[in-house]
Image (spheres, rainbow, N blue to C red):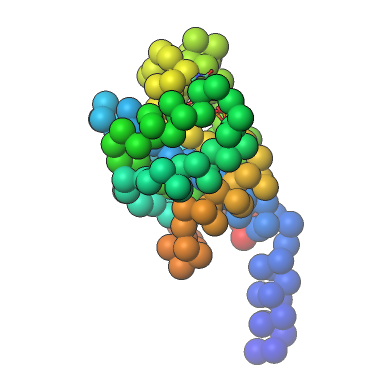
Length: 172
Ligand code: IDP
Ligand code: MG
């Protein structure tokens, strides 16, 4: 019993588990919602094998968006960006998986859709940088900051993905 608990604790602290549990913040922007691309975007991450651990549909307010994009506050497009992001509701999501931050950015494609490769979300589904339909965290620290900004910890759900054995060589 005690040994079982210790083994379970050890297993739960293994590096493989920690890696699989990396999380990123993704958001379908107002243009993605208006254009009916929510399902398509979610499907790309689901089919890759990543795990959805949080999701909400909301109209973001100016204060939240200014905080979200605070690193860009000095840029000439900042005010326009904050307005664009308030043009309609967004879908805020937390996704989990091995290397999900970096791979998520690769799935999304370059910031400017004119430079995004075909096969990426932005490369396939949009045209201009000011209407690039999706946000994804650019680093693990950014992901942690953005997830804390958009979600209460109790809104993020830890659950077992039953097909995990078929996605990862080593499971948690
Ligand atoms: P990212 O979304 O690929 O991380 P960032 O450089 O963090 O790109 O910029 C945040 C968002 O600001 C972009 O996704 C885009 O919507 C907007 N943005 C970035 N550069 C420009 C620009 O030159 N003109 C208009 N909007 C821009
Ligand atoms: Mg960014």
